[in-house]
Structure formats: C-alpha cells, structure tokens
Amino acid sequence: MDTDDLYPAAEKVGHTLKGRHLMLATAESCTGGWVGEAVTAVPGSSQWFDRGFITYTNVSKQEMLGVSAQTLADHGAVSEQTVREMVAGALAGSQAGVALAVSGIAGPGGAVPGKPVGTVCFAWGGTSGGIVAETRHFAGTREQVRAQAVRRALEGLLDWLASQA
Image 1 (tube, rainbow, N blue to C red):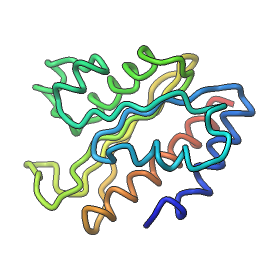
Image 2 (cartoon, one colour):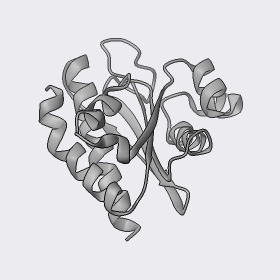
Image 3 (tube, rainbow, N blue to C red):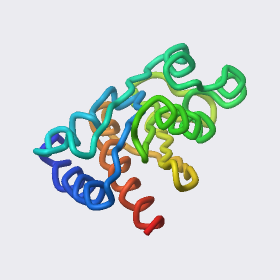
Image 4 (cartoon, rainbow, N blue to C red):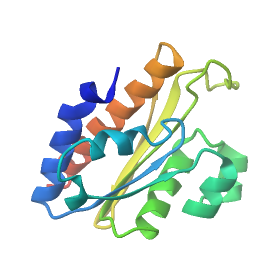
C-alpha cells in the first residue's frame, strides 16, 4: 500500500479539520512519520496540520512527548497507556487542537508475551475532548502492518471527530 491508497482518508480528515478550524499533531512510533506523509500529501494541509513527532525510542517518547518512565516500565511502549500519554504530549507540545498517536510492533521481530507482531495501539484526543485509545492486531508483512496502522489512525481520528460533533 502506498500513500495514494491513503489519500481519500487523509483528504477527509483534512476537510473535517479545516471545517472545524482545528489543527492536527501526530505522535508516531512504528509508522515512522507515515501518517504525517499521508496528510501532507493533501494540498493545503498546512491549514490543518501543525506538526508530527516521530518518537521511535522510549527515550524520545519521554523527551519529546513527556511519556512517563513509569508508564513505559509498567505497560511498555506498545500500550494504550503510552499512546494516551503520547497524545497528551503532542497536544502540549504543539498548537494543535487534536492529536493522534500510534505505537506498535510491525515485525518481523519484537514480539513479547501478550503482544505479538502486528499489535498496534492507537489514541486520539483533543484539547476540548477526552482521549480514547484502542489496540488492534494486524496481519501481514512489516510494510502491510504499518500501512494498516496508518489507515486505522486516520479512520480512528475521523471516528473521534464524529463523536465530538
């Protein structure tokens, strides 16, 4: 899957955010900036996309997003607790009104007990609403897991925005 396959979802995100005069920030781990790539493929995205944080290591999650060392120790980087803190950190460290976060195990290695390859945690939230999180399990190659994660991040943001209407 390439960015073109993600364009309709990214375009809908942009239309929705622009219509609500909201800016987006992203906090990405396993997707490595791919959500940011997808949304900036949409012309005019500077009107609704503020910035992205690529925080692949635990240290970067702590330094850039304020994720607690205790959260990482207790739950791991791939957890709903961590992505919730990533969203909060992205909101605090940006001018955005909404943020999304992604952290997962794309493979082929990295699995731990209870978290097989393909486990991806997501969170979405905003300055005027709560943060919601979920965990999904995707099948496929590293590239396929990452692409599915990008798609779900965008779709989940649309779901979150609809819940705030």
